[in-house]
Amino acid sequence: MTRDVARVAILSLHTSPLALPGTGDSGGMNVYVRELAAGLAHAGHECEVYVRADRAPGAGPPAEVPVEPGVTVRHVPAGAFDLPKEALPDIVDEWADAVGDDLDARGGVDVIHANYWLSGVAGHRLKHALDLPLVTTFHTLARVKAAAGDPEPESRDRAEAAVMACSDAVLASCRAEAAQLRDLYGVPASRIALVPPGVEHALFSPGDRTAARAAVADLDLGDRPVVLFVGRIQPLKGLDLAVEALGRSAHRDAVLVACGGPSGTEGEEHLSRVRDRAAELGLTDRLRIVPPRPHHQLSTLYRAADVVAVPSRSESFGLVALEAAACGRPVVASDVGGLSTLVDHRHTGLLLPRRDPDDWAAALDWVLDQPVRARGLDEPERATRLGRAAARRAAVYRWSTAAAALAGVYADVTARGPLDCAA
Image (cartoon, rainbow, N blue to C red; front, side):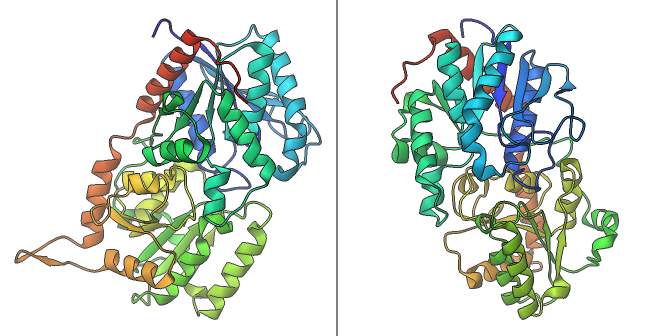
């Protein structure tokens, strides 16, 4: 690296790192932006985080929110305040121009880091307007979602390809995502930077299950087996599959706790279908749907569970799986994307290649089985043994490490100068 990078413009057009994960369009990306900005600031960098103002002045957060020394969130208006996510492509240029004006007024930055494809389109425009290098994290990819049965508009597909062609670096959270960028979009390996996210171990760490359940006594979990789902409630995340698996589980007293809120155009309808299906299966009393909780409170839910289910159709990384593992809980997950990296099959949890409810029920039952006999000795309860291994595996993922790697990417792209646009 030829010099330190001190000033970064982080773009997060459609959702704010200040928003509660699990509500609306807020999820793992919110945590990612917040924690990486904090990690960069702790290392001495200055981060201006730009989001779209979605509420009128006085009805929401101030235009400028100092989060901590080195991190400021700036709410930039563009279009009507109550625009749905589907309408945001129409105001990207307006928002990007307003962000550019603000950056000019503040003396500029060294690099732009866009998060999600909408911010990528804005970042692409700003790169050329300000002659700055562009780093992009996509978080989800249209072609990956389409292959999993969740097609996106063709306009998004084209926009992603154009942004990738002009990004000085495209971040991948794991090797599986790096392969998707190469194979599906043709991004050269030389422009793909592997920066795995982290977990805040001061918050997410192993803890006593009994004490955790006492802290969430309102859920009435008792001493029954508990399966936990954390995430936005929409078809992509697969809560319906978790409910079907619960109905087939041999543990007839098991409880499924789902922490999250409806998201996207299909969220409310999906939640209604999930509730109706639970009633058909006689599971109403065994399904607890609880509103999203502040991120720092999720550790209590993880510790109160016996196993965490992540039945997503696609997942670029899977922070829920990492947080659960850090809390010493085994994970049963779809064998997709970053989940394939986070879960060590049969050692820290199980990976399932199919979306068959019988397979998922059998996987949950395997994890929840009581002490097993091996080599003539009784081993600890399987879930406990898997959880211990999961916590050890999660220990290597730290936000400080991710921030240091990202700072290196920034330094490299600024030293080279902006890439000529190939889009």
